[in-house]
Image (tube, rainbow, N blue to C red; front, side, top):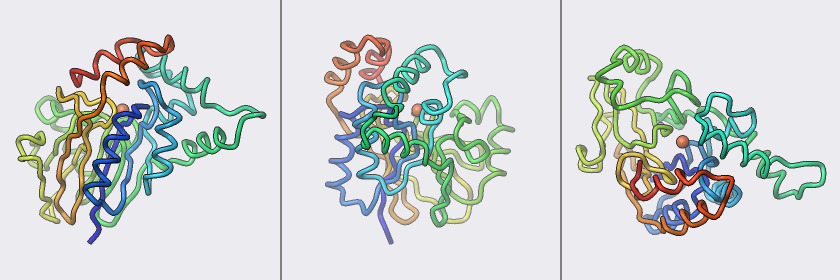
Length: 253
Ligand SMILES: [Fe+2]
C-alpha cells in the first residue's frame, strides 16, 4: 500500500513549499500530489513551478493557475493584481528560454480532476473542480449545496481552494483537524470530502504550512513551520505584490 502526501495552494511561497518538501522527505512518503494554485499571491512563482515539476507526481489546475492562462476577471483586486503580474513575467515570448516555455506548458497541461483508485482529487469541488468553494459554514447555511456536492461524489474526495483544512461528512458535519485529533480514518464505504489546507497561505488562524499524508484509508493532517519573515520581506520589496499578501501570512488569515 503506498503512502503519499497531498499538498495544495502553494501560492508562490518557496519557503513554505521547501519546508514541506523537506518534512515529507523525512516522513518517507512514496509520492506527492498537488491540488493546484501553484502561482498567485506570493513572490516566487517560477521557483514553485520548478519544485512542483520536480517533486510532484501529479498536479491539478487551480483557479489561479487557470487565471494565469485565461485572465482573472472574476478575482478580487489583490488576487487579480498579482496574477496579472505573474502573467507578465511568466508568459513566454518568441525569444524566451526553454525553461520559461516549459513552465508555461506545464501550467497549460494541468488537468482539472483526477481519479486515483478510490480517491477523487480536485482543486475546488466534485461538481465544479476548479472554481467552487466548499466552506465550513455551508453545512449550516447552505446544506442543500453540500447535499448536491455529495451527490456528485462516490467515496472519498480531496480538495483545497479554501485554504481551510478539515473534513466534510455526509451527515452535514465539518470537523477541523484538531477536532479529529489530526487523523481522519475513512470507513471505505461512506462519502467524505477532505480539505488538505494550504501550504503557502493558510487561512484557519494557524500560519504553519498545511498538508496531509494518506496511508491506506488513514488521512493525517500535518503542520510545518517555515521562515515567514523571509517571504514577507520579499513581498514588501516587490512593488507588484500588495503588502496585504505579506501581512496575512503571520496570522494565517
Ligand atoms: Fe488558493
